[in-house]
Amino acid sequence: MAITRRQKEVLDFITSFTQRNGYSPSYEEIAHGLDLRSLATVHKHITNLHNKGLLQRAKNRSRSIDVLPPRAKAKPGERLPLAGRIAAGLPVETVETPETISLGDIVGSRDVFALQVRGDSMRDEHIVDGDYVFVERTSTAHEGDIVVALVRGAETTLKRYYIEGATVRLQPSNAEMDPIYVPASQVAIQGRVLGVLRRY
Image (cartoon, rainbow, N blue to C red; front, side, top):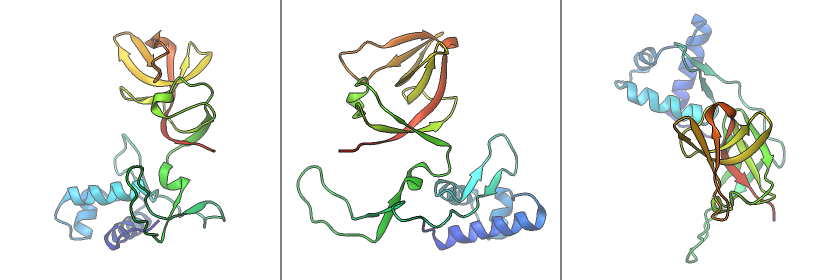
């Protein structure tokens, strides 16, 4: 994935600093080393590099920036040409672009797995029977996230997640279906949906 000149400078600085010292630089050391006046600018570059799968940031650890090894050269079929944007409303002129897109562009460096959907409980989210969802493996979720939830240690379901006191509401996106109410102690989050793939 293409990066800007400044992002490359930040990446190169972190790599050489880590090789010299055996630990990653702080944001202050990056700013000083590259003559950047704002820590916010450093944070922006780090976030962009993280989103592009070139850096990893560990939570709850100081000096937590790790440079990830470069991805292997894509095999045929792993990247698709991004031929432009298409209107779903009025027709617009199509201009082909030299860009490409791959699954890695969507999931980045996150731990992701896929599930095939069975049933129509999430149809109002445009997730229907036979679709594939890409799920980030995580045990936590925010209010309203679409999650894979393990209920009572036995069954998994794909629903929107809401906490209501000591109860979790697993909300289908289908007006014909009722929500599922489960004691919070009997719900385990197994992942959060990042995207959906449909075959025709």
